[in-house]
Image 1 (cartoon, rainbow, N blue to C red):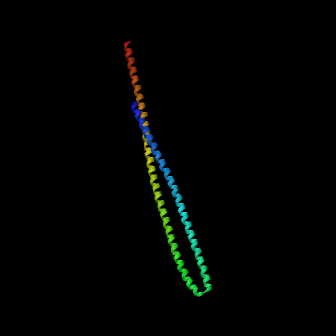
Image 2: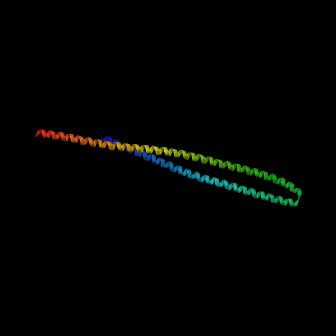
Image 3: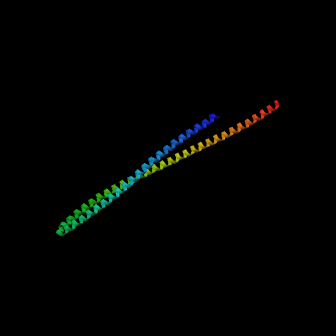
Length: 185
């Protein structure tokens, strides 16, 4: 009987140790994922802000250059009609090249933004997978806690059964002893 109690107690201790290990693992994973999630959030905000700032700056620069070009055209127009035509063609070529260059830069910036969003989606998927693993681990921990509870109940029931058996045996021995003592008189 004592060996069974010790075995149940040892099993309970092992399960509690396993529960503590699983809980520590779960906490470690959660802490790592919190750090990664915060870093991703910060990175996304930074990338988005940088992209919008760069886009705004380039648009402003393009507008300023366009205004400057228009000012030059007005100055040249006042000087000579022939030079105006030549200058307009030159300016249109430069403008077109600049716009093409700016369009290429904008396309590149948009691609970088898409890539950042793709990385964010990957990190979100990793977070979701981690949360699923966390839920699975919590289920395992709950199952082991229920098993420990079951062992505790079995142990309590066993103790009650043994006490009852001892009580009945004591009563039987006592009654037989009284009969034997009563016959000797």
